[in-house]
Length: 365
Image 1: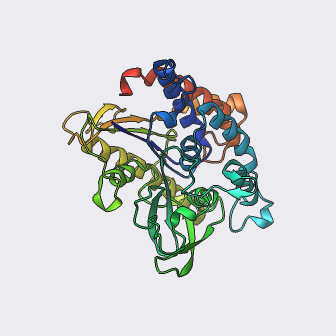
Image 2: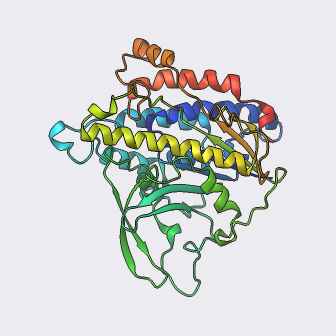
Image 3: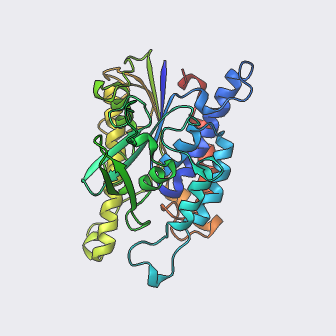
């Protein structure tokens, strides 16, 4: 059976996903400890993908890091990455990219001074990173699969392929959230050897902030050349969210916000709707064995799917009470917002509680 792990974007709320992944890894370690004492998630999932914060976690898992190591790296990375620039430097982005870039280079190094590339042998699984190419106006769900069209190497020439792109740069591109971080410029080569430069932004500005459907398509459509067989006994897709923050407003409230505030609220609402829609599509395409209610009309959509794969969705809606607890316990002024570092301890606590209650051994074939 091929097993896919999909990780949503969501800024600092990625630590909530990490708590769920810890529970998954612990269950699987108990199952496989005799035959593999050093078990990590890359030993179970053979295709791991993510967008933005999910892309960072996906790349760490793909290179064989344990979830504990990912959590420790993530806790170190957050406060450094989300360090506000002085207000007079913030007219293009709230945060700089220098510290973020440095940490990514340190975490994704092939050898001393040499960056890991997308085609690095250190990656133990197939990996997908989602980003949006602002130069061409297209979404790029890019993988390290050697048979993908723009990854194939011609033995008769030395023209670089996408596999030669530094991995840190693709992760940075995937996490270049508008207003939060600067865009990322990446040099690529066309099949005829022509060098081009493209400007990338966060994959959240695409249909795939939840990359589950993109991963299913990459795994099964003939054009992508992975050619994984479909069926509930052949394909398993586990999708992990970062938690949902309520995006609701009193009647008439939106009509009184300024242009910037209204734009940001609209973007947050669109991103949240996209997460739900991708989840809904997966439930229609697959057979759902775990997933909360989508809405009052559809409920959890556990019946009537096309059964192209076995599907499991872990996601939590933060309650008003949980947000208030976070304010009281951590001093956070904007609980669970994408860059709210103060929320991290509470997010980790809530993630562990959710995972203990929700993630079951029988969910993991």
